[in-house]
Length: 132
Image (cartoon, rainbow, N blue to C red; front, top):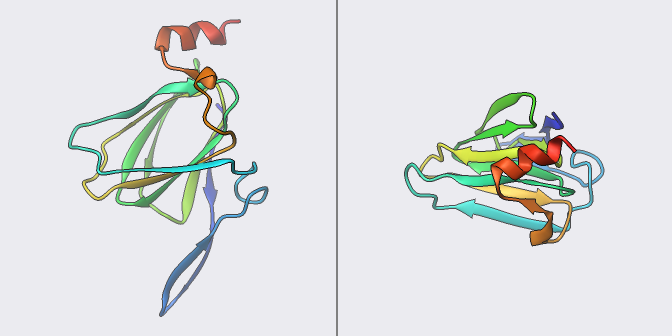
């Protein structure tokens, strides 16, 4: 499965924390799109899709959330609750995001501009695409 935790540079002192994430260093692609998710209601879920080409880095900026990942062979769960690290997710990985804390903010860096053609939103189609 093409996922890994990325640890960002952090500069902490009595003024607070400054966290740095540079493209082609910690983030292994040029960022073409940023978005964030917040104010997710109790027991609500996000995700339920895969991408054909897009790579992403999920950063739990505030609070916590659980990301469940599946590549057709293995399933992994990752808790994001540390803004000093991010979760890299390659293409062809099904993701579901659950268990958002009330104060959760998820920042996502994406390798491509939005394209509906890049999404696989049906789980059965995702599994079938892996067997091609």
